[in-house]
Length: 181
Image 1: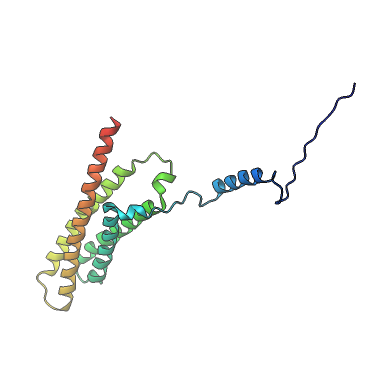
Image 2: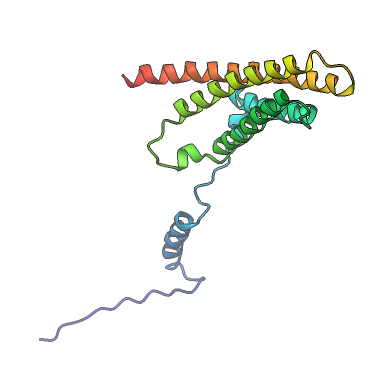
């Protein structure tokens, strides 16, 4: 008796119906291997109050930098240091939310607590820097006094924005910790 061998050949041309499934699987594999496949733009976050606060914090920091520079007095040096470092941190948090980094990275980081601590520390430093800016410029007269006092006032507004952001993060962090227990 003879044995029979059956060989099936699949046509890999793009017009063949048999080629659709392997191409779909290759397409899914290519999506997973793409270096920017993890990027998902999250615009909806910036329609929420915390997202709008982050944008407002960045804009107020730019205003503070515009009015406070150049630094003529020592108090302004500290104020501009606080403003510029907090602006950088806020821009990093904006990109973390905009690009969905929290969801994409699987790191053992408590993101909410990290952001809460960052925002609370920045609020405290902003208050200190703004008060130093206002105290340093209050005895002076002349042209640079007005814009530097304005920088200090906008710094107080940004202090309120960061304090509100820290409060909202604290409420959310506390609610999430109650659920986890």
